[in-house]
Length: 193
Image 1 (cartoon, rainbow, N blue to C red):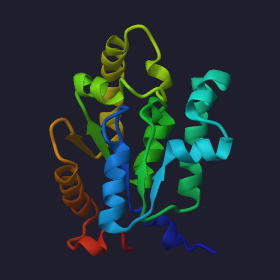
Image 2 (image 1 turned 135 degrees about the vertical axis):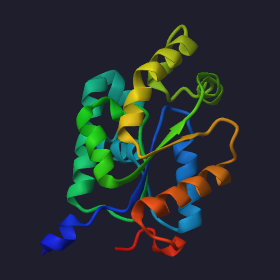
Image 3 (image 1 turned 30 degrees about the horizontal axis):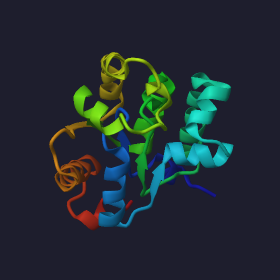
């Protein structure tokens, strides 16, 4: 049985948020190798739970249903005290206010920001982006970034612009900030209680 003291301890995860193509999955994999902490990709977890791709969920059940699945997953992770993980999230997870609050409960939230141009370059050849299957994806990216940027900012503890940076540089910056956030000084203590 969980003690009251254990429940009040903050969860020590690094949570990556940002628009599609900002590098969340790649940075998550870098951290996985660097720190040997398990990586959870919320999109992959939902696909496994539902037995369908994100594209299929969007087309058959709609975006609102998918956002509800994200909320439920975040809630379950907090209830189960998911700890000591790198969590990569879907680009629109911040659209629901509830999710923005839940993300901050999960740990240190890092917004990986990227320019619209670089986002387009990184995502234009990927058919698994249901929201970009339209006549003018660049216009859509600009509109969505304008809408979502304040929400990413609200949800995050740290913003890093990934345009033009190497993934090792990004991960080092996040690691230093996470140490400060969690009040620790040694790399191997970041996620200890």
